[in-house]
Length: 166
Image 1: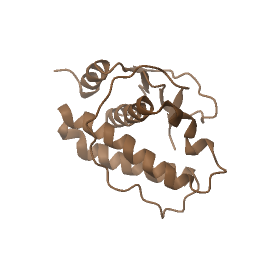
Image 2: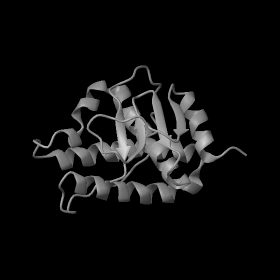
Image 3: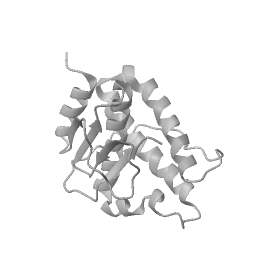
């Protein structure tokens, strides 16, 4: 039986997104050196150095961001991590992360419901680390993650983004 990661890759390919795993990730401008994944709207590359559960989380979560960019490519340039001058950047990030996780959760629920609890736990852990990176004092929650099954086909790339070990 194919692995969950392989099944995710097969499903994503039907939506125009290539999911791969690699020992080496290309550097991304502005991102720390501890990259765990890179993604650009049509290609997601996850580091083979992360655990299976982290690889599944990263695949689904970055897929969620790709889904956001399919709807509005300009969102890629509205990354709160790149705008320290925004006074409300933590709140903006919380909304974006919750939405991305909703798309990722819907994808995962299609064929790997046994992975959902781990995905949700990693999503909460990822949010806490990202919020801290943004300067939050632990007071801003991401909110409830609701699956959004309105999954669309990717049609173009955006400036490459990175998921990193916070």
